[in-house]
Length: 257
Ligand SMILES: NC(=O)c1ccc[n+]([C@@H]2O[C@H](COP(=O)([O-])OP(=O)(O)OC[C@H]3O[C@@H](n4cnc5c(N)ncnc54)[C@H](OP(=O)(O)O)[C@@H]3O)[C@@H](O)[C@H]2O)c1
Image 1 (cartoon, rainbow, N blue to C red):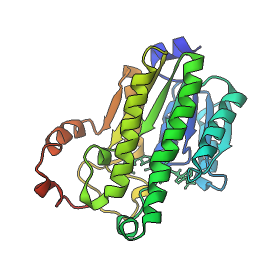
Image 2 (image 1 turned 120 degrees about the vertical axis):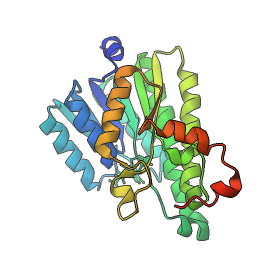
Image 3 (image 1 turned 180 degrees about the vertical axis):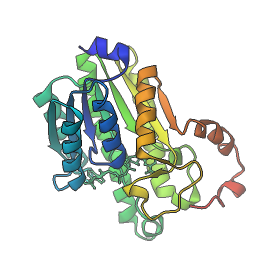
Image 4 (image 1 turned 60 degrees about the vertical axis):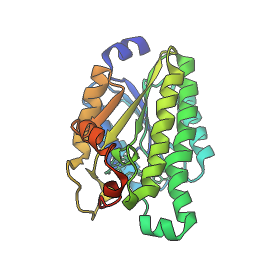
C-alpha cells in the first residue's frame, strides 16, 4: 500500500497531531477530496474544533475516522498518542505535526513561564511528536512526516522572537530528522507559510503576502503530489526570505509585528 501511495505522493491514511487547527482542518478537507480514506485526529480532549474536523472528514468521504488525545504541554503524552494511533490503525502514509501556539510576546518577555509554555508546545512537544512518528515510519518503511513550520522561524524577528525562535528550533529539528530518515523509505516535508488568517492570528493585522488555510492546504496537496521537501506558502516567500536573511540587523530589528 505504502509504495503505491508514495509514488503518487498523496496519502490514503493520515494522522494529524493538532487535528483541530484551522490549517489541519483545511488540509483534511482537501485530502479526503482526493484519495485519503483513514483520518485520525490528535489533540486535547476538550478541543471543539477536533469534533468539527471529525464531522468534516466523514462528510468528505473518509471511511475510518478516529481521535487520539494529548496535551502538548505534556510532551510525553504526544508520544503516547502517536503510539496509540499506530497500534489502533496500523500504517499511516502521512503524519502531520500541526499543533502550535503563538503566545503573546510582551507577556512572554515579562513572564518566563509564559515563554516556556510557547517553547514547550512549539518545540519540545514537536520534537517528541517527530521522534515518535519517525520511529513508526522507519519501521513501516514508508510514509511522510509533515511539519507545520513558519517563515517566522526563517529569520527570527524582535517583534515575536519567543514564537519565532521556538519555530526556528522546530524547523531545524525537522530538517535534521529528514536527513536522519534518508534511505529509510520515510521522509520529512517542512511547510513554511507566511501569515495565515486562522484562529491563531484572529484580530491581528494581516502581514504582506497573507493567505488563508485553504490556500495552505492546496499548496501542501500540490507539494505532496510533486514530492517537494519544503513548501513555502505563498511560494514567493522563499525568495523574499533570501533577501530578508541578509538585511542588516539594525534594519531587521525594526520590522514590525
Ligand atoms: N496562522 C498563521 O499565520 C501560521 C503561519 C505559519 C505557521 N503556522 C503554524 O501552523 C500550525 C497550525 O496553526 P493554525 O494557524 O491553524 O492555528 P490554530 O487554528 O490556532 O491551531 C492551533 C492548534 O494547536 C492546538 N494546540 C495548542 N496548544 C495545544 C496543546 N497544549 N495541546 C494540544 N494541542 C494544542 C490547538 O488545539 P485546541 O483546539 O485544543 O485549541 C489548535 O488545534 C501551527 O503550528 C502554527 O504555528 C501558522
